[in-house]
Image 1 (cartoon, rainbow, N blue to C red):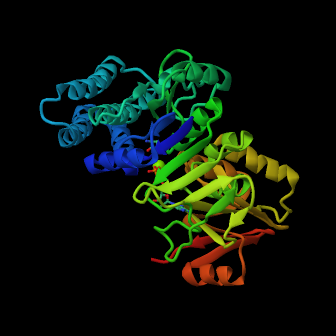
Image 2 (tube, helix red, strand yellow; image 1 turned 45 degrees about the vertical axis):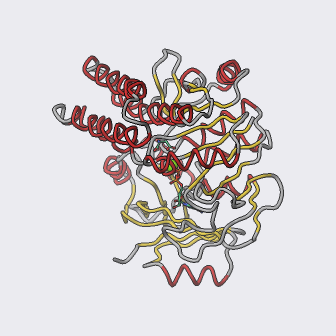
Amino acid sequence: MKVFKFGGASVKDAAGVKNVVNVLQHTGFQDTLIVVSAMGKTTNALEQVVHSFFENKDKFPHDLQMVRENHQRIIGDLFHSESNEITNKVDAFFDGILDFLNANDAEEYSVVYDQVVSVGELVSTTIISDYMQYQGMENHWLDARECIKTDAYFRDANLYWTETEAAVQAAVAGKSTLISQGFIGSAPNGMTTTLGREGSDYSAAIFAYVLEAESVTIWKDVPGVLNGDPRKFSDTVLLHQISYREAIELAFYGASVIHPKTLQPLQRKEIPLYVKSFENPEDPGTAVSKGKSLDPLVPCYIVKNDQTLLKLSSKDFSFIVEENISEIFALLHHFQMRVEMIQNSAISFSICIYNKYNKLAPLLEALKTKFKVQVEEGVSLYTIRHFDKPAINFIKNKVGIILLEQRTLHMAQFVVKEQD
Ligand code: ADP
Ligand code: ASP
Ligand code: MG
């Protein structure tokens, strides 16, 4: 079995869906499980529905209707006008969500979030599966909620591997072409869960792992993994081959082309991952597998925006030592801050953090009872892996004011205040 994954950008409209079908005809689609994300920016639009449901009840039916109409337009462009069957199937998902929202006033935010947002993947895969049938491409639509078994940590669910393995194997047995959803699973009580934003790559890796697939291919709007995000750097270079280890590092430091959780299951079973262009499917793309760390060996640039830099010092001129550091980390953990970089000196302790859950104010309040705190919000973290002198100079000339700099053997990092 092979696993393919098509992201939101590849199926953002009817032309995108037709292109995916062309890619599948070109590569072949037998013995293939195809994982698909929600179409285009649907997940963001559904997040807005959830937001309205909690903040502005009168507005959510309208927000949901917008998402429904967008899918209806795509269906209209793909199928001839008499095909009511697909319209009815997609309507049933949207009606289900309306009923759920109208009946569940007291549910927790993250529970509601997962029930609503998962509809993006359910409808995209339904449309694609039916469109393939319509084009004579026999396939089975697989409900990922019957396969991907998770705990009830809504919005960022953790996998139950053993249950998932059994469920996937039973569901896939005897079928050649399957279309399933990325990003979604189900909790022990049967409610839908999601695996965290951008989690469809991870879904593909989960299916591949439990099926011992021969390979995973993720189809992107870029030629493969480049040595920098082409939206942020010009003159990027395509990486032909990357080791799992190197890819894990790149993803961990923020190369958003591959979701960081994707790689470890694949590495464990040595399943190769290909990152290829859905616009030029015949091009080789990038292979992530065992072997050479990086080919070609060039500096790789990663940028994370929206970071916060904290500089802590003691109020009484004492040194920042183990006891203070453990206290600081306990607070960072408590307020769910992601620590991106730390630097310690005798009298100050600097931390670059990502304030994912909007808890900076209470964190600062707690820290200020013990330390002097300087805060710089809206900074960026630049990472160069495999840096050399020209790469360092390139970044220093490109960025604004460097607030903090740190180097290890293979990596240089800069916390930067960008100039407008
Ligand atoms: P999808 O969700 O459709 O699968 P994403 O938008 O998540 O795809 O990922 C593709 C995007 O990742 C590219 O458009 C590119 O801007 C960005 N990206 C970030 N870092 C890199 C990199 N090192 N190489 C290639 N693309 C990158
Ligand atoms: N649709 C989800 C998101 O936009 C999952 C994914 O695309 O990977 O986050
Ligand atoms: Mg994505």
